[in-house]
Image (cartoon, rainbow over all chains, first blue to last red):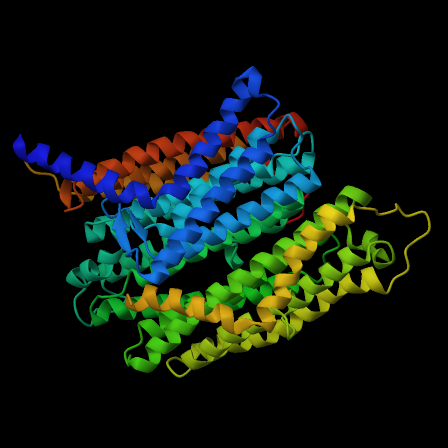
Length: 537
Length: 103
């Protein structure tokens, strides 16, 4: 009896003294959700607009994660496992939590400006938005298989509802049904894979998986070995769930439909935030195989090659399918599939270099630049993709259309919006001196170094290079419509307030340029995050 | 009493999983697909319980399945609400009839 008392005491100590203090940003978001719902119940507080409460909560969480990140870099806070090893608190996780909170602030501001949830639905919409962000933050700091599944589900379930949020629209309800059906299926398959992995290793803790696997995989066991086969099957099933969240090639079919049916604001949120969370999780899952024997490394190496092939397929498919699209949101959806492919190349190069037989100082340097490239790309992607979707949303409010043909001659009526769209598109294409170019450069450079380990990486690199050219043409179509075509007579006039709307759009779009012109300031931070994740220093 | 190993339980779990996947892929009715998802989730649950009895996973496995049950309920609630919304707009829950978006 005494032992149990001691155990409970220790658990309470660990939870209250360290874990809860480091978990405050998530708690703030949860508190904000409760506050918004309470305001709905109490008649006195009905008049408090939900967006201000949501914005306040998001700002507090962002400031808090910023402080935590600062302290982690400064060394006053140490990286540690919290909640008895369920979550990991380190620079990598905190960077992504900060990233997600920043993105949340920008998305809420955008919805306030474009007015997509009406006054009646505001609290519901922001509850879903904050809830989804909370799930993604848990994905980014997951350190246990249970948290992997919990994070994915917590991020997905509110997203399903947000997609179907436009009332009385046939397309919106159809998009939501498709999303929920495919999403639930992918989550189920992923859970089955997790159950196999947990059963094989006898633990759910991610950092221990590599070690435990090397106990059961005998040396020199090939794919014919039943245990190896089960490990590969389980890992592939987990990857199915993550690939669905990333909308990578064979699991992308929901993406264009969902983006077309959902509001542009929601599509922008899903395209950036859920990808960021899923990539953080994928990197953690990929690194979980480290610390094992040579046989385990070989399995992980093969998985890395597989991810590379998937990445090449996703980039090619996304870019080629984008050609025939007439709806701008649908085209951007295919472009996000292609961009997920580019980012996945970094993960593939990371796993190939990390688990190659001839490791050493050089391969450690390459793995560093892989993670650095991934983070850099995600950071640029936040601004360029949100910028594009924000402009689509703002233009939709004026011309009530999302067809590319209706964008003809828009530059004569709203030069600022079109200029910002051009910035985003140049960055999405990857033209220098935009941020998109340098981010692609870092990723391609690390893939190039990985070619020395396995020939398949040449294929991945070639696909990436060709796709950069493919991408050029369909993006240019938007610019051609806006700048070169004449505005048809009798087209609806576009007008917007320069002060809040124009400023907000500029604020999102200028960083795409800034991240390209001043890369040195950022790379230092990104490099630091990557080196702490990989080497613990 | 003769001891039973983990294999029969895992076998039933695998059968449930395959049934669920077949159900998800062949049913055209939205509710039918969700039933398939439930089968898959419960197949995983059965695996977790089995592993908690026979491997060092221990109580973690049971906690896993408890969480999965809670999440499955939440997911089913949202999914049914969306299916109802789809029905209100289309007067059917046949997923093939949702063809305004061409994926």
